[in-house]
Image (cartoon, rainbow over all chains, first blue to last red; front, side, top):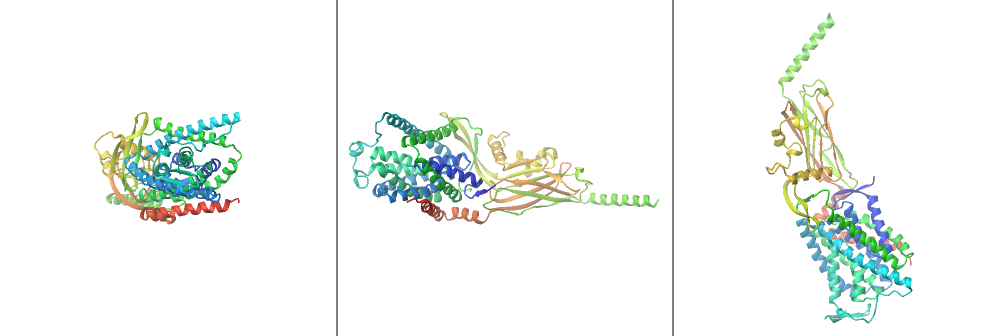
Length: 309
Length: 253
């Protein structure tokens, strides 16, 4: 029933299952205010979509979900254009390198492994840190102390770097190198993992650059739109792995889910939300990690030779 | 009296005609239910009927079993690389690989009874009939990579076999039904029908089937591979429009 044939993934899937996956991840991303790529890409892979197609198509979907998010932030004046542009320049460079890396890894037959390993590593580390942090915040909140992560005026090693720039909207005067490096890193992740990279960029901007929390989300979404757009185009030209039919179905599901998620998110407290998100991130990481460690039922796999599509 | 004379005459006629048939060699004429299969957005697989007739059949009934048939349906051949995982530092990664030049994207073997019982290995190998007789590129008796291709493709429904998949429905008319799953590769397919009598190959007939993407699916696929830059830009524009539409619909303020 309601089977739809995906022209690039070259398989037939149930449109309701894909819509449901989009809606479920959209719900979570609306609730937690995250992009959801880090959940969607593994879900697509678990569903049998080839990893290279999953990653490239997910980059395309994130364009849609971050456009509507960024627009809302933009209306509230929460986007630091200058910071966003510096992050973006790094992001484009990172994405370019990442897409070439995916091409090389496909030829070597190691792309699935590297995608899984990246997920296990990043989700494990980020999920672990978030979990510890939110548990601490929860116990502090119970003790009655105010929860604050930003300590303005405190200097760290980043302030010793050259190429200083003034970022008015963020009220910062720092070197352009750290945001550039963060951008490169996020671009790499977008290309290899099919994520927007918000889960790296947001903590990096808060803890390393000390960007005010109000500006962080809008600026990160602004950068994500452009980096995932560039990544989509690069994957299309280099690997031909963007499936627009799949992306469109995911977009529709995601948009609807996100609306309900945002409403649900307002009923939960920030620390609880973060603890929940941390647990989910850890669960995905563990699931992918177990798949790498447990002996697979089938040791062999068939791959197409490049050009033999 | 008249009645028995007539019967005798009829019998004689039948004998004469079957003797005449015996002198003429059997040939096989076949066709398939569809010569063109289109993959469109609702494609979820296809069923193919291969049918034909053995001319000058000596069979008196469908179940006489004078003839043995083998039907091979073969999809487009492509080079493929087989990879094997091993445990390295605790995780399973691809370590060894082997390239096969002509791997059929689809392969089905249907017959009236197990093909090893029909004829000898030499003929089966010559025409590539049966899983044991395809992809034999090296003279190694045990090739785990080759076995893996067949095992994986069978699990995906792309390689199929049925020892009773061909049946006579008359003394000369036969048919075989085979399913093409939704994940079949596009390209040209060949159906080969082999007729055997007492282990000897009497006749061989071949038909081609064209399996191609049509309509929207074809448009998307061609765009992705022939105009990848435009395709990528279009994909981004679609996403931006979808995002704008979503915020216009759900805007609360």
